[in-house]
Length: 145
Image (cartoon, rainbow, N blue to C red; front, side, top):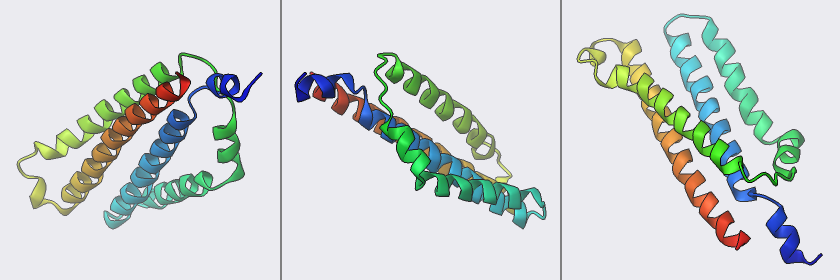
């Protein structure tokens, strides 16, 4: 077996890396920023969310994450699964942001204004991850031939 055959069977390494990193960044943002919003609102559950967001950041730099990325995924259905999950994330997070975007009184309440910022940035992150997944898929597809 030559090197070209091995690289074709490796699956979609850029897509996996981009998808997992995007999910971790998104969940870290929601955990840390959302937890901060809850703490400023006086809710103690915000501390749990901040710790959860920091746990995602630590996970990104752990050996477990590298072993997850290094696993060979040769299934041809992986891109479909990635794009279905990414699409659902964009829709769900975008819907949560739309609640605050279309509220005419959002700027009258500091908690709602902070939530608007948190969910708007989360929507931008999820859309950015979706676009990055498309680019990574196209690069992997070109490499596969």
